[in-house]
Amino acid sequence: MQLTILDRVERPAEDVVALTLRGANGPPAPWEPGAHVDLTLPNWLTRQYSLCGDPEDRERYRIAVRHERLSRGGSDYIHRYLRQGRTLEVSLPRNHFPLVPAPGYLFLAGGIGITAILPMVRAAAGAGAASSLVYVGRTYAAMPFAGELRAAYGDRVTIVATDRDDRPDLAALAAALGPETVVYCCGPASLLASCEAVFPAGRLHVERFRPAPRTFAPDTAFDVVCARSGRTVPVPADESLLSALTHAGLPVPAGCREGVCGSCELTVLEGEPEHRDDVGAAPGRMYACVSRSLSSRLVIDL
Image (cartoon, rainbow, N blue to C red; front, side, top):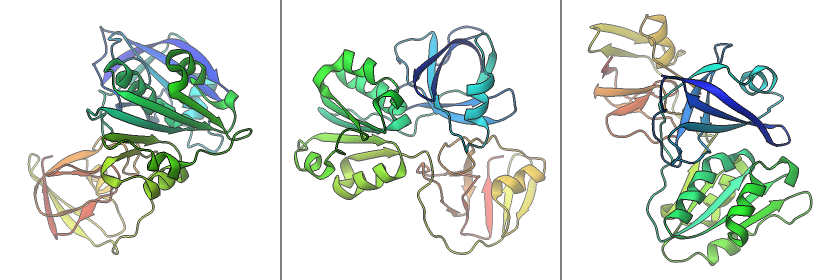
């Protein structure tokens, strides 16, 4: 974890607060477009936020948080109680949504999904790649950084406020896609589903804030062997691996607990994990909050 100081609090749109964080003990760790961090709040909640500042700024991080009225307490606390000068713990950046090199990009952002896309737009422009952004929101006043984007990138940015504009024709955008153009999309599930229906899967990259609904076989019990600690922990059918390890006194850091942030990654040494995450676990890795085991015994590096 890194200690940071809340340097600036801004309100770039209705119900959105932007926080600028500087390192308390030197510059924070470097990052690349698509990265996010875990922010540990003074009320003991940990939440994940995309870094939406300039990756070339090695002194500061910027995140933006929409106030969700029915949230689990994270956004409400940030909007009501966080003040300039507060010291906050922030994880090292993780990136499950990297910007791949390409000659052209089409970026699509919905609402607060612009936070993940904004640094990508900046990086693509800096690399001289052909790029365009379609940014969709309910109203212009509720769309953070819309003015900043328009000022910097002009007609490469299309702002769609659905209270006054027609929704973008994604099928037409797909039909006009250049042969080497890749597509990046972040936003609500409805936008992601619409993009997945029209854009070629091999050229579409999406980031989810909530897991996609999927169906798995019924949960079964298994044993997890913790190689470093020498402990064997039974995981009942009605308990997650993350919870079983925590109850056994072997806690694993965890943020979203929904399989979208990657903070609870474990190394698998033996056995066959059943991946239920939306991150896309690398070979030999699994995420303890949602994933289980297809074998009766799983050996992990813990």
